[in-house]
Image (cartoon, rainbow over all chains, first blue to last red):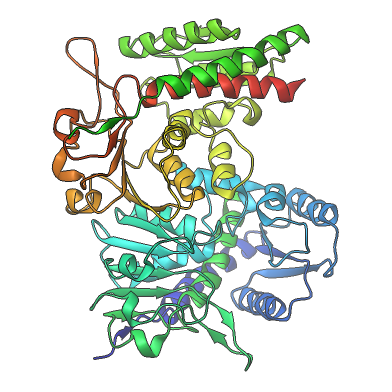
Length: 282
Length: 282
């Protein structure tokens, strides 16, 4: 038995189609949606990701400015760029790409992104509002986890979900979004005693640790649903998930692929958020 | 066998003593610490609680202003009061007391409390910064949970903690603080399937649901530590916890009492935060 492949491609396409229609309407009304991606790294896989966002944006009718500050930009240079973009009425969405230069913390710098333009939910205010149940853009990756489960009609109410990873950008906000869906949520991490025992007691496992192939069959209960958030670069220039798919597919009931799972949904949600931000702006 | 009583009184006294010394120093230096409690309810148990905070504040040398707006204050009246207090240089800490009049949401109104004066961590920005690992005042009750466990030397790293309750003021921030202590944290709630099965698999149970006596022996593993955050008013004018202490004490290894557990620590931490806010102000 192999697990059902829980693809993200159809959902991403649907979100892009809806977003393109809204973007066209906004452009017609004189507010062409525009996204700025601030880059302060020479990291190759990051550059590849930023180009893919820009391409996806242009395809749905969102102008995408890549603001490249160079790999050794000072913290204050990055902050100033974010403040300026926040004040620029023609910009509706702002993403601060990671990694950042040594000494610059995303959580700190992202406070400079205007809350209304914070389409990747990086500003701590967005995160706090999310946790408090107030309107805010969620970090797109965390939202993609819930969206892909929804799309594939995975019931969450009362189910036990184990989130592996406690990062501010994925694990923690995903845990909150899953709680909002009435799941019972366990957050696991590097200090969790007997991780396989915890994850194999869960109905749904969300792997967001950034360690290629960490999650094998022994981490998964028979029939459980597994969401793979990992995007670990491989030597060959490809992407490897946090899940060992060959091992897990024999055990799981459903598994999101890498690539083609959470990734495309994340990008589509960033575009959806940008159009929403532009629509509020009007 | 009866569970060890994990009192909060000694810890609260120690925090008050330290806070009184700092308050005296601040007063001498010309910055007498001052706390404002905004009240917009005619609720009796709330009035009792506010008076107890005021008394505790005065005892450690913090001036406490009770700003009573009446039980039918308009949302905008409350917001204006919070904005004015935030702008008042002589005020260092601001608490917005609950319950609020119908139609007013704490999460929304608390955004009007200046982040630096938000000594009960009610502003969503405080919550977001907390989750993001940036300096912020935590909601005092949530912090008291961790403080009382620390005080009684309950190890948290790698241990499984079940938090029962997902409120913005206690359950969710407590879950984050426990994660920061390297616990594996499960958040349970009214929609959790088989709550006793989940809580009785945990090393530590934090009960923060607001239902008197919900947690009985069957919810607790032998030897587990139980923190009772409940403060449910009883017919006789007393307080009842969320834990049925008579039942649980035979099973648990340790149990915080109600009253005398999390409550006094919470109040002491509010005062500590106020003095810290005043010290930053200087």
